[in-house]
Image (cartoon, rainbow, N blue to C red; front, side):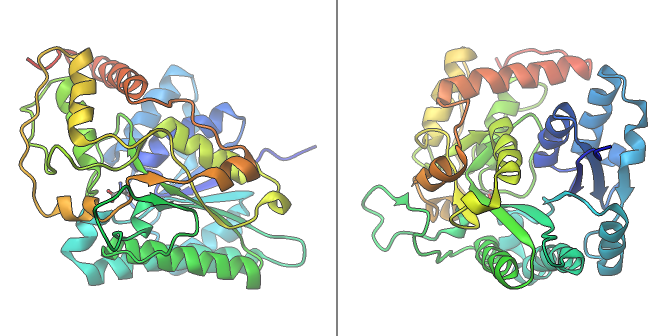
Length: 349
Ligand code: AKB
């Protein structure tokens, strides 16, 4: 009898896991979920409980382990117990939070990463190559020497970030690639743009776009946008991003020509273009711009990504490939969420 594929997720309560877990379940996999908080205290856990209720999955709670990824023996014991077919490591501090405390950022992001990598290494032997999927970011790149022209980052463009978060991304990409070559861990990664779904993000510099969508469906005072109207980075619908993680995990290792791939969905919109796209769906929607230091982090990232290696090696294709399509999907998701939580789905005035 073949065993159900076991997918272990660290950071199960976070913004990415919120969409990854249902997609894994729908593809017949058994998720095992680790987070430092219990499900009811996390965005992902609360969404999972609604999802499980709607699909009659009463044992979902037994999938959840409260475990801090900083606890090295705890991570090793869990990995040895589960022997996952694939491990998704999603726990990290995001860019704006990292910039507030660079030392903490390095300690947390690198310790979480190395704890998972080392524990998987202990399972590697001969043909057994434990699989680790980890999201890198657009933030692995730094500013162009001259800011006067369009910045399209090729997959192997020099990675010289000027944010601490980006430093941990480059270090982890390099370490994961090294462990794949030397220590039998089948490490795979995608560099993701800003991600949008119905989970409130926290601590990221791309969060200004998420905030606009949350504000557009109402329920609280609209917040000022913390970057100026011209700030521009690529964005992606979260369901496309998690599908990319799953498809990269499912690809044959022999087809992969590298360990880390850029992926993108459509041309990067400016903050003002996002505002206008929302206003086409929510008449009267307007944004007040009050840029702060997070604008600098966003400005240091590319306007565009060359994702041809991902397309060539494992067939990457986004489903949501225009700004207005993304806006429609996201507003629908957010309104459905508000009605699931029995909140009045009133548009912004
Ligand atoms: C952040 O803003 O820190 C993240 C990212 C772009 O990786 N969303």
